[in-house]
Image 1: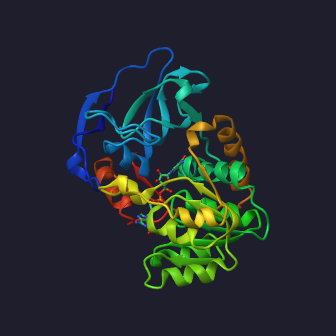
Image 2: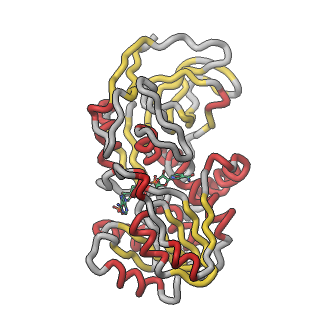
Image 3: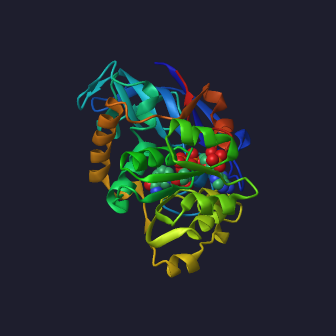
Length: 331
Ligand SMILES: NC(=O)c1ccc[n+]([C@@H]2O[C@H](COP(=O)([O-])OP(=O)(O)OC[C@H]3O[C@@H](n4cnc5c(N)ncnc54)[C@H](OP(=O)(O)O)[C@@H]3O)[C@@H](O)[C@H]2O)c1
């Protein structure tokens, strides 16, 4: 049986994580039992929630234990076993973590297939695309002509919110760092892209929002979201999907929200967690497959190479070095 390496948590970071917070464990894989499959992992997806779980604070996820395998969505190939409709050679996705081989039960896996580029199964057709689809479809009820503001518009989830907003006929304002503005406009199709790292951010945002945002798709929180709340329309809907700023902070307890403006505009805040809607999640996957098939969705991503580079890639991703979804290729 092949040897396999895996990353476990060695110590908790307070700020951004680095290689020093992880340990590599090596061991021989075991032969799968009758209801198991051995999966060789090809691609792992990096996500901000991994950064949150390294720390010792609670939100919608629970912290990793010291010595625990670092969990994440992966794409892999079944190399041994035959169970639950899966067999050798099948491409699959599942939550199997930072390891080279994994033993999985069939109910941990979904078929991927070769219709699309491998990376799409971890981007548009996985958490990033499906989170954007579910949150907008279930809670925004977007209407043509309304203004949608997306706070991390070049981000992993935000890039799909921008595109789905455009497909729904909305006017989309994306917020991103200055160097990503072209991507947000030229590749994702936003009507305006406002740089949160520019000195005149507040003025530009106000110009771009015009009469005010009807829907806010927020994965960032902190001062960026608070600036958006200064520019919302009456009865605006705020989809609170993530809090990147506070989660990356050494003081997540110091999160704040511009409640006065939300109150003044009679806005509603809908907090959202993908884990609460398994039925809608499956529906969103089918719909996103159709949209990808019709060529209506662009995936923005970056693939790095090499198992050993995973921890550094996570720290760099959380620091904003990359654009879109970040994946690491293991095989
Ligand atoms: N609720 C759910 O079910 C659910 C599902 C998926 C993700 N999430 C959450 O959504 C958030 C975003 O996830 P994601 O995967 O889409 O990540 P992401 O937006 O791609 O996150 C990285 C990007 O965040 C931006 N950023 C980082 N620090 C910032 C700051 N101080 N101010 C403004 N922007 C900053 C950077 O983009 P720029 O260079 O453009 O600034 C960076 O590239 C996370 O908190 C995640 O936990 C929630």
